[in-house]
Amino acid sequence: KRLFESEPAGNSKAIPLGDAARSYGAVFTFRKGVYFVRLVVYQETPQTSDALAVLARAIEGRLP
Image (cartoon, rainbow, N blue to C red; front, side, top):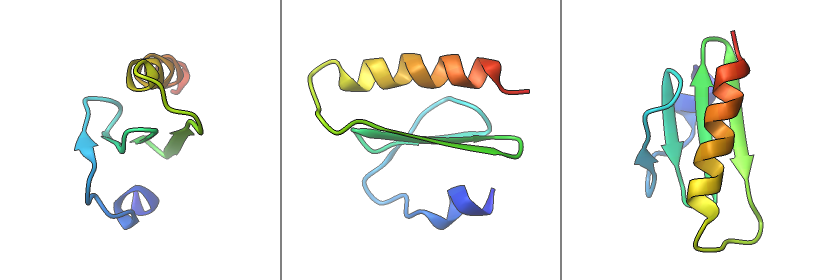
């Protein structure tokens, strides 16, 4: 929880994922219970945000 909250929310967009989540465009971060997940892409395309959302939901579903 502290790691997630220590990051500036600045230009992020809240997303419905886990206990709390943010999208920074090419970066998704979320926490669920004791787990903190950060997904980063290094080459953005118009599909980047949707692809990250699908991957993040898949990871969230595997966490206890």
